[in-house]
Structure formats: structure tokens, C-alpha cells
Amino acid sequence: MDMRLWIFFLADHLPPKAAMKLWLLPLLLGWCVALSASEVTFIALGDLPYGKDDSAGFRYRQLIATINQSRHEFSIHVGDIKSGSSVCSDEELLRQREHFNLYERPVIYTPGDNEWTDCHRKSNGGYDPLERLARLRSVFFSSLSSMGKRSMQVATQPQEQPEFSQFVENRRWQKNSILFLTVHIVGSNNNFESRDPKAVAEFFDRDRANIGWINAAFDLAERKNLEAIVIAFQADVLESASRFSQFPSHSGFKASVGDTIIPRSRKFGRPVLLISGDSHEFKFGQPFTIQGESVSNLYQLVVPGNQDVRAVQVTIDARSTSPFSLSMISPITHQKGQ
Image (cartoon, rainbow, N blue to C red):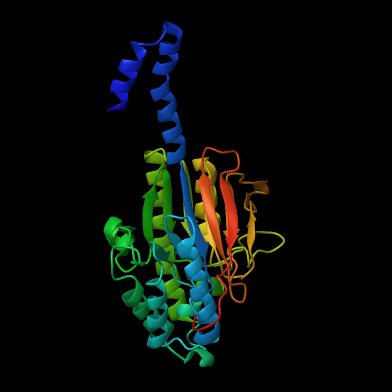
């Protein structure tokens, strides 16, 4: 029987005071549903796998198996799907593409520097980084949906901002009242290499696209009155900070993070979480400042990686005074061949 019919029936057979309390039930139920609708749980990981497939790859697959058994709606991999000393071959890219196919739920990936900017190194095969970037886009970002066995539709920057048509890796989606986006910001100072004119040109083109994508996300969140924003990228952007400035003039993160994300977050006023990898050491805090004053609604999560083969389960309750709850996920341990 419909809930409303039950309430009408019971109210006719109860004393007046009890009937009055019964009429409050739908309001209470609606309040509980609204509370649950503000929560999202997802997995964040990155800088994995690092090493040979029969060892590092094996541990990574164990971690994916654990992730598949955990409570979450989707996963975000913040890049570096290979180590900085391994070859940037097509075979390696396709191997990592197959790893993403092992995730039972949607997985969204944003590139790291090991996949393209560092591929000029002799140990990486001496590739042209821009050729590797083009190949990376064709392997991982040809679809308008996430990877994983159960995919999820996402918006892409070329869809929303056609003037940035090549940046198919920048993606955005909404869960409940929380907006998520990936932005192509990588380590190695975001490829801002002043000695290489081609790298500098690539950097400025991508930096303009990233700033446009970030501003569009904040505009959307403000227009829709959303409760939180999560921004994922690869670089640990404070790695180049000096004692005088978090984002000195030579930083490849100054315009996109220092001059855009941080002030837009302060203006937004609600929880904003930046997720990255790059430094391989788990960190969580509120390190960002404007003119020495903390931006208290802006949080940083740096996921572990490399030999620390763990992921982070993140639950967001944007209405809580502590909006982000974290727990670590370690690989299921079993013997090879089992």
C-alpha cells in the first residue's frame, strides 16, 4: 500500500496527539533522504603500477580486486600508470588500458607526467613527448564515458568548450550535489620547460584550457548551488613552493592553481578537495593560503603510490563540519596463480 494511504488509515484510528506525530513522518523521512543525498563515496589512487608486470602489476591487480569489493560509486586514478624509468611503448599503454577494464565500477583517469612529458628520457625509449600525448589521448580518451566494466557518462571539455577541442582528457561529472572534474595538470613542473620551445608552447595551450575548464566548473557549481567540488589531477603542486611563495613565478602551477583554483575556492565558500599524486606519500590537510591567510574550505589529498600500493576511500558529507572522511585500502594478499 502507498505510504500516504497507510498514514491516512492509521491517522483515522489513532488519538489526536498520536495522529499529529504520524503526520510528521513524511517530513522526517524526506529529511533523512536529503541527508543521504549529500554523501558520495569514491576511491582515489595514483602512481600505480610502478615496476615490472609480474611484481608491481600483480600487486596492482590485487589492489583492484580489493577496490572491487569495497563500498564506492567510482574510482579516480590521478595518473602515472607507469614508473618514470620504464619504456613509454604502445604495449605499455595498452597493458594499462586493460588494467582499467578490471575495475567493476566506473574509473576515471587523468594523465601523469610519466606517460608523456618524461618519455624523451633514454630509459623511457627516447620518444617525442607530444607524439606520446597524442597516442595517450587516442588510447584512453576516445569515448565520452568512463572506463571500467560498468561505465559512467561524463562531460568533456571539447563538448562544453569547443574552442579547446583537443583536450579530451579534461572531464566532469556530478554525483548528488557534488561536482567532480579532472584537469590535465602534471608533475615535472607541468611541462613548463623554458629550454624547450615546443614544451613551452604546449604548456601555455594546455594551461589556458585548464583555466577555462576550472572556471567553468566553479561557474556551474555556483549557478546550481552545489555543495562541494572535487578536482583531480596528477601533480603535487606544492612541490615547487618556496619559503616566500607557494607558487613562484617559475612554477607551472601558478596560473591554474595559485591564480585560479585557490581564489575561486575561497569565493565558492563550500568544501573543495584537490586530489593528486606525484610525490608518492599520503598527505591530507589544508595547506593553501592567499596572502598568508589559510583558505579553510580548500583541502588537499595526495594519494600514496610507487611501492606504497594503497588507495584511499573518500566519503564526502558536504554538510558536515568535517566534510571528508578517509580510509586506506590495501591489496588483497594471496599467492600468484591462486
